[in-house]
Image 1: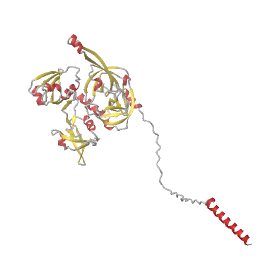
Image 2: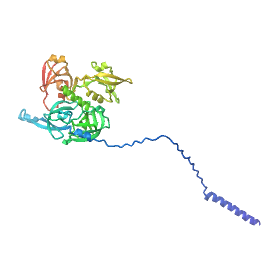
Image 3: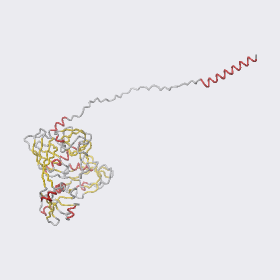
Image 4: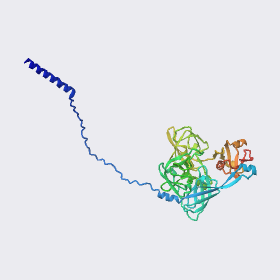
Amino acid sequence: MKKIFRTLGIAFLGGAIALAGYKTLLERPQVIVEKAVEPTMQTVKASYTPTVINSTSTPTDFTEAADKTVHAVVHVKNTSIRTQQNPLAELFYGSGSGTRKYEQVGTGSGVIISPDGYIVTNNHVIEGASDLEVTLNNQKKLKATLIGADKSNDIALLKVEADFELPNLPFGNSDNIKVGEWVLAVGNPYNLTSTVTAGIVSAKGRDLDGNTNIDSFIQTDAAVNPGNSGGALVNTRGELIGINTAISSRTGSFIGYSFAVPSNIAKKVVDDLLEFGAVQEAILGIGVDSSVKDLEGVKIGSIDENSDAVKAGLKEGDIITQVNDVKISKFSDLKGQLTAKRPGEYVNVTVNRDGEDLVKTVKLSKKSTFTSFSFGVQLKDLSKKERKKLGITGGAKIVATNNEGFRYFKVGPGYIVSKINGKPVANASEAASLFDSYNGSQRMYLELISPEGQVEKYKY
């Protein structure tokens, strides 16, 4: 009996051990996953109704502006006589034997600005011309005469005679154009007449490196190529807002950017040429402090004591931020505004002085000092008293010079340039322009009056 109980005990013990092993090693525990369910968001009724604008966006239409412009843009042909000298022929065959004259033809564009035949173009299109011919959009050819030119702004005015009213373009206000605005460039690139290209205004008041002038160009990405010079830059209303002048290129052809003289400057130059025969340059009577970098505006470094800037209350250290209603961020902006004005005009100049904005009304003065950087001479106009004393009607007084020839012959400040190549000099501006045109390949004859009143002649 005891044996039976022992056997049952061992069996129960073995079963318990087996069950414990199974629970521990083989059976997996039950995993219970609880999901936290977020309560459903309650919908709240509101009275707000979203505004939906159902607009149909149509592309800008250039056809009307293009049609207005192509008939007012002309092809300009410039024929000039060039002289080529051969020093060896001069040496072996005598004086004059090495001189050869030949015709050179250049082409460009122009814009008719009045029904009676006035045409504006670039100075570099017609410079040195002995004959000018204009071809209208209807292929009719007309002879043109040069009324006047301004090299510093690269603007020239021509006149043609026709027995009918010519299609023309009105001047727009270039101050009103905005960066990003659509524009059309119309001209005759590569003699392809009446070519229209489109782009946007990329920048305003752009000053180009590589020349001596401070420019204030309109920059666009409208395609402009050789032959477009002097052509029209118009807005989508067909208003003339610029004269296409230059391209930024390493190849000589368009690669993305072109530049135009603003219409406000071109119009002012045209008005001056018609009224005075020369451009009247207006100045504030200040010197600019360019030592401060990253400055928005133009800092006044000095003030001409004889200018109206003193009377108006401008001071050294003032920062010019606005002229009339036009923002001034850099000197080329200021130059562009002054170039479009005449001496005697009044402008409202906003300056920042010690953190305070002040508005001063300044009467613009006439620029009387001009510099020929290529020839190395600075000139100024003569006073009425000086002209009367010397018995001349024009002339230009030398203020400073670093020209080697002048230095060698001891020609310096106080000398008066009275004639260049036998032609009387009207003023300092004309003398500086004539000096700039000298490139050393041709003869130049100067007639000067010394401070002692003696006439001296020099040959370059």
